[in-house]
Figure 1 (tube, rainbow, N blue to C red):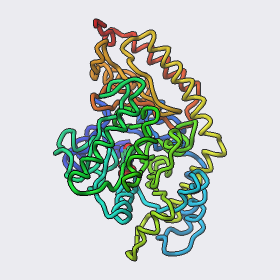
Figure 2: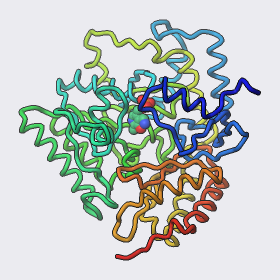
Figure 3: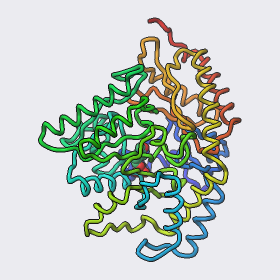
Figure 4: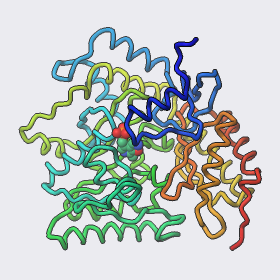
Length: 437
Ligand code: PMP
């Protein structure tokens, strides 16, 4: 078939005519042509096990989700100014999963839009624009999102924190500023320091935003007690608390449906994205009646695509599939098995410094005996795994964390396959780092 463009041509056209800061995965990029469940297929018919894509939550091209979208698309798709069952149905499905306080929804089209709206809500509610966020946090690509994303403004091409953003140290109990038992309390004190800095400037805090497990930070689990203490301090000074569930939400955590529920807190605003549309652009902001009432100050909130019948049919089917197929339970069971086995692997291969995470949202951190990050080995491993047909991603400020966040239909057999190849590659010469302390 000579009407198919070669990969080289696709690459050279991208370089010339698509955004100049778009990146490509892998040194030799792959062209994926099909998806099914936890698998992807490239143009040569090669099958890959996907341990990366937490967007294809209930599986790539899930039959029921695709069908729901196609059927609604053939009937009608309009904006939310007309009545439609689908928007109410999706709202009901979501509200059922949330604490009773969080029972108002705004539907949007991406995680960035969700966080952008959340920050507007903060301004409308508190009149303040000072935001406290974590070091290496990422909350989206829109203006206000970038302004609170240390992952971006403290990284390549960034220009540091804007005046109204206040960053506290990454609450990493393994290699961060504070480690061990008291870490939660110590990091909460760092949040207090930022509150004090805002006060010294003669202003007050608008909000505190964080992910329950910091994804771009390298799958950092918040230390015990930290979130409850931080929320208490923020609220004591009139600020709102936002939980960014764009990566971790919708049952992936296993033990709980939402990440904040692991920490026994109830945020004022929850932002939801990636998994909700299973690949279709759909996101949401959940908040309390009070927050929603203050945001509705007379100015209409209009969003052309947000809450359209097609997106809502898809989102509803995603949530129903999670329930029907008991995928939260699967995330717990397979995730706990995989985590326990990875911990065993860490005994055998000392360059695995830490294994962490919840459900099917895990991280493996590679370090030497001095806890020096091993970025080259991490990158090598991800590329070697690709050769064995397993897709893995790397992240963290030092590029030394392997992230495991597959579609939550991932099975124990998939976990076994992953472990088999991990073990094989950890045994290779390149991965043998001399451990001298
Ligand atoms: N929040 C978090 C935690 C994210 O990881 C992302 C995307 N990686 C976003 C927000 C932004 O979502 P989107 O790319 O859908 O705009």
